[in-house]
Image (cartoon, rainbow, N blue to C red; front, top):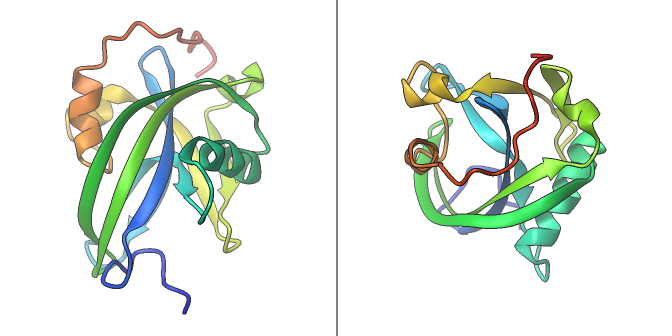
Length: 163
């Protein structure tokens, strides 16, 4: 039985998300909740397939969605996330990785289009962290906002001079 993206009653999903940063910007996809009538943003990545490690999921998803390879991958945090999207209950375990794009060209353009496994095209863009920290834009999972507040790990950031 195939289960919809946000249906959580039958299944807990495991997600691998990549937090890509450059200076004060993070790279996120933009989606719309049709019931709440608002946009939300999320780091790119996807659902872990049976028998697949979360690290492999992250590499596969970024390659599929953006045709990009990644490096400097590090597991930062794990969360349990229970939420409602499009009026449907969801439940997921989130593995958050920090990573870098191998090709610097992905830091030069402000907005991209990623293609989901269902063929849906979704905008992905560099957004200033303060937009989420000051709650002007909604970042999910919500626990990620607290992580960004405390992010002082000093990881390499690519200059944002082109944004």
